[in-house]
Image (cartoon, rainbow, N blue to C red; front, top):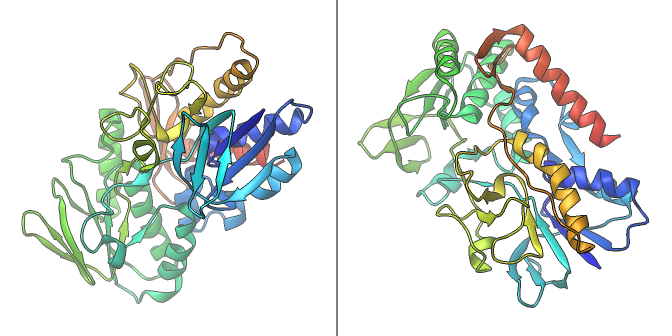
Length: 366
């Protein structure tokens, strides 16, 4: 039996750990990833701010695979022929499988906008953070103008992290955060939105809301309304979109191109295809946000169901819960925490977040 794991996201890192403990499994496993390093998004802003070093925030996928007896292939799956059970990679390799699982995350929306690829630094793949931090620390002169596209959690965390980094380096950057909606932290509760807005205002980050980017030039962003925002550096932290592999493979997707799966995390097109994390859309749960906590919760169910499917046994339902701990970093060892009706901000939420993040990394690196 051949099991292909495509992508090194949170759920597949969990599977690698399980496979390391079960080397006597009756099937051979290959993990395919575009990069040997898988960066952890939960610590991205902390790394930009200088709280963490690069080695703190990534897994070495090849080393993890080696310890688990898994073959590692640094490549990208571009097409699946589910009737023949074969995949094609970017390098032209053709591989067959019995079961395949996708955990490839999501791409950044807006790449198709004229000038975005040429004149912006994008936060995905997360390996780009190293370049962003280097430029902000060493290359930009004092009082440079930075524009950050994205008013969700990622955009806000990046803006505040760079603000604190610039203060530490006595650079005093002038930062503008651009959002296509009329609110920050869209999808979060109102208390978190209010606290987030307060932090941004106190940090003197300029907000340009309800504006959509029309085009990007070398030193300015031009909105559909005609508004122009000049900048010395543009960081793209917009919303998410699906990679094209699912639509190209004629797998059933939702309207945004994410692979449709049932409650077993199994493709609604093909029973031998599974998925987890940001790249999937679960039937009847369209309210789910693209955040890592779901991949972590899905991981044990994915492991169970792949094993049960291979052994022709009944599988287990995954039922996402919207009542989970949510923490957004606001920089300088501060954060906003939300759980049910409880909303806190300050050092304690950051301390909790730091413990959770470091524990997650230690547990899976070990």
